[in-house]
Image 1 (cartoon, rainbow, N blue to C red):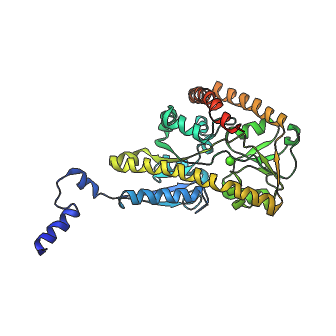
Image 2 (image 1 turned 120 degrees about the vertical axis):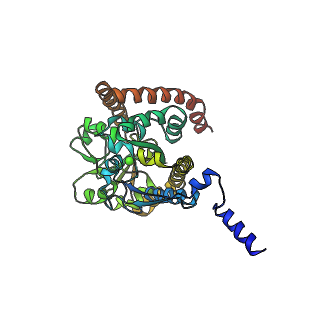
Image 3 (image 1 turned 90 degrees about the vertical axis):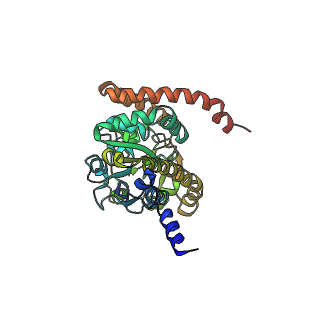
Amino acid sequence: MKRRDFIKKAALTAGILSFNPPAIHARKRFKARMVTTWPPNFPVIGEGANLLARWIEEMSGGRLRIRVYGGGELVPPLEAFDAVSQGLVEMGHGASYYWAGKVPAAQFFAAVPFGMNAQQMNAWIYRGGGLELWEEVYRPFNLIPMPAGNTGVQMGGWFNKEIRSVSDLKGLKMRIPGLGGKVISKAGGAAILSPGGEIYTNLERGVIDATEWVGPYHDYLMGFYKIAKYYYYPGWHEPGTVLELFINRNFYQSLPKDLQEIIRTAAYRANLWMLSEFESKNNTYLKKLVDEHNVKLKRFPEDVLKTFKRYTKEVIEELVSRDPLSRKVYLSFQGFKKDVSQWARISEMAYYSLP
Ligand code: CA
């Protein structure tokens, strides 16, 4: 190849001679910081946030580079929402029920006790009007939310004593966020919201008596089996917790359309990646907990679960009676749940009960 042709070809490849506007646009590079509610490089969830950043960078050919910060590295874990809202940083990864004190309607997009599982939450959010409502709820905070992870059905939590009846919850200090926490308070316990990085120490020091976290794989990595004996199921309070990516609206709108779509696509991937990671490992780690660490696996008694269900109804009724936005979101959530549950009865429930 002649030298002149070679230069011309190289220049074309680099887009220099192209007069195609998107190609000119394509040269503009962006940087973002993503703060998270998780400890730095936290397995699965934090790892998923790191991967999300990497996928965006790779898909964009390096045009959008994101640096991920663990909770406390740039801002404290539970201040991620405000930091992104105020534009101090561009993105955040967390769970929307952490912001319930600020925006109560947010918690419906993370987990509702006795609510929907992971696939049903995805169906509601992506295809059932949930995402549009979530965007409306975050709009006053100048944030754009999207799902970016799911834990699947969680476990009920770690306790140092058996829970034989609701009275065993009286005075119990339990780390449990969101609506589930309100239910525990109604049952006479004290619900405490603390970020993942503080739970072990708090439980070890007796600041809390019990904690819920995620499920066998992640709870094993957290080491709770070293300081609590009883591991309860099912995770009535978090049947398919959605993890979120939230983006400062001004930053998002400053991005060209293709980078916006790359972010959305990567968030979908993170959503599926995290759910698959948990689902593929939970049983292996449940066996380790029971067989190698003598954890006592227990099911909550039926009457305790029935009481939790009754209190959940009351907690939600109280919330939606004083907060119109929560009412609006809940009506959509509940309507969708009713519909999808009817289908589940003759699809999945029927399938699970096959001989
Ligand atoms: Ca949890």
